[in-house]
Length: 259
Ligand SMILES: Nc1ncnc2c1ncn2[C@@H]1O[C@H](COP(=O)(O)OP(=O)(O)OP(=O)(O)O)[C@@H](O)[C@H]1O
Ligand SMILES: [Mg+2]
Image 1 (cartoon, rainbow, N blue to C red):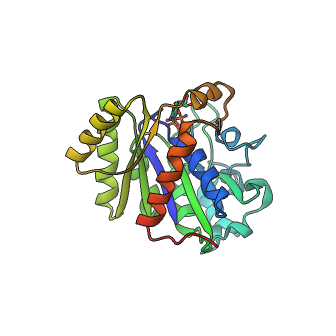
Image 2 (cartoon, protein in one colour):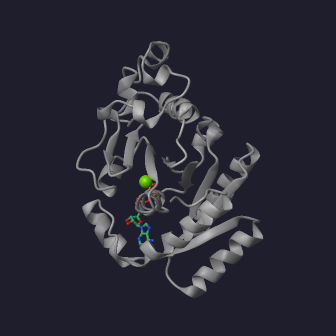
């Protein structure tokens, strides 16, 4: 199953990715996290790794030579890419939790991020998962990835929305774009919810827009304070909220529990 986590900038996509990945790994899944955000570089730390993987963009010789190199022979030129075939420096792993990164914008005037969109799209298309494997994609903020076709091979889209109306509006756009390309499982997660009252109001907003919701993560002071260290606290309320969310995702997607 390939899940992408989308939403407005700062809504909590990377946090949700890390919480979901940890919970799925604890249940015995092998989890491949795909960092498809070309701007932010700290996902490795949020997942408990001490350095980032070498971006897959380097495997194809960097942005400039992407076009020529895509034609050359390497794991990315195979028709199917198994996690076991991705060379070690490009795939970090720890106890079944794996991380690959597509690429980052490092310099000013280096050109647009379109080549990374192409690489994300092709990698996700070719990625062939085993039955005990889940891929969770940390998408760039906003909706541009739909324009680049990155989501074409995604089974389920999780839209992270937080209370500001603008976040709900971006969530609706993502919902409509994902549904428009035929993705059946498009679900919202309400995040950073400070109270039951706000949860009810946010839920109503989503219902009025016909956006199905798979759960609510309350504002978690431990998560927020650990973010100043670039890490994710795994002790607060969010850890419990994510368990229900993973249950619903797996059951709605028809994925059987392991073991
Ligand atoms: N449930 C939560 N409770 C408290 N703080 C949260 C929660 N979810 C996310 N945050 C905080 O919100 C901030 C943004 O989170 P995060 O980096 O995950 O967002 P993002 O959507 O990935 O951002 P970007 O668009 O920059 O990639 C961080 O400080 C994070 O700790
Ligand atoms: Mg992020």
